Image: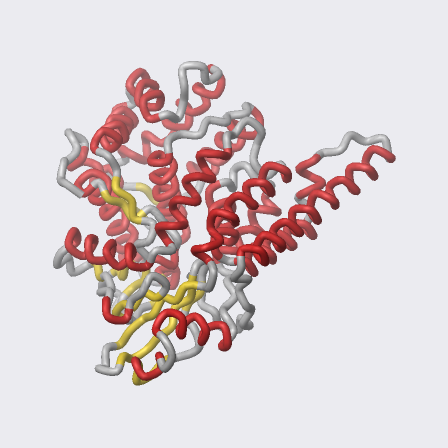
Length: 447
């Protein structure tokens, strides 16, 4: 979630008709501009490039602005596109879409009051000693306000934008149409399973009662770990569209950028260690790596974990496949790596040999980082730059279009987010030491 300082209130289109009209208008406008541009190119004797015609700076700004205004599924998918498809998109578009991770508008006061009245009934003000109408954070599905309950509890209220849950299915379908017509997604990629999963995930993230249960579940898993803190949900003030939690003061994890190296290393190492516990011990992973989901206590001693709407349980057999790939990668066993990639679904028996060779080369490039006795210095970005170039070659030149199972995509997303965060903080992480306890058979605790 972004901090909404200096952002003006902008009402969320709440009816399905209004949202469909806006997205349909955006699609028509962008495609119309592409057609006009293509006509000009043909008149000049040049062959039109559909991607270049679509991804002009003006079109990219229009796309970003409209997704930010829509919020909900529209903005969420724009965020995912910018985070997970950066190797496939031109840098100009990736940069502009990346603004969606910060540029969330807030509800104007009248709409906010209407949402709270629907959730709590008339006279909802009596439930609170104080309610700050200025949100402290805003994102794709809701915004967060600080409040003090009538009995003195200091709370953070996560308040969902109106109409978001009802519009998810239509939003995803309309965005799928936009993506197919626009050429934003490389040819050959089957969008259907991605859109289905986006729809499922968004319905889960928009169910705040489910998120409250996930908070309790993770609190039980983490236990009394002094390095990790979670807010408690408050059921008496929570509904399907308002999640009441402890207010936990803290500051953004990125604010550690100029703190001593040891503190940055410790915080990022905790997140990597937590991920390994989630996957191999609990088989239950918070799969959203958004930086805003991690904060630091005011004394700098502990991490605050937020936003469990994207928590996901992984089947034992799936975890075992990922474990075998990790073992093979650390050992540098190419035959076992090939078998694991096939088993998980990153490649198929008919995947072209040049694509398999590129993937194997990328895995081989990772091995020194997985085995380095002194850990990985994420301030040195040469490895990531090499992998990015290989990834662009794989997708843009070699036409890789496999869509692995969603579990694999979720884990890929989580690992990529942790690596981005480690790089942002220039952290040094003892990756080999963290992996060592998991190099034998993975634990089989029940999630």
